[in-house]
Length: 93
Figure (cartoon, helix red, strand yellow):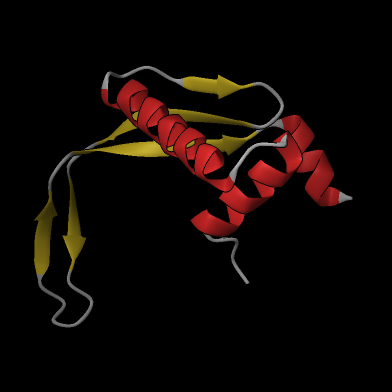
């Protein structure tokens, strides 16, 4: 089962001792800030938790799996998310 946005806001509110509305606003602000930084080409590093960064994927030749037809896949910019050491260790147990 996945933790939804409202579930996450509820847990943040409970943990921080704030209202669920305030927690939802903080979560939206966090998402907007990370998005703005990535669009601007900046990396976001939350030491021990995660790192958000962007990368460039080169244009390449691919194949349509249904028809076998060769297609050109254009270059694109992608988001990279890496887990930090503390998060990895917490999940490991």
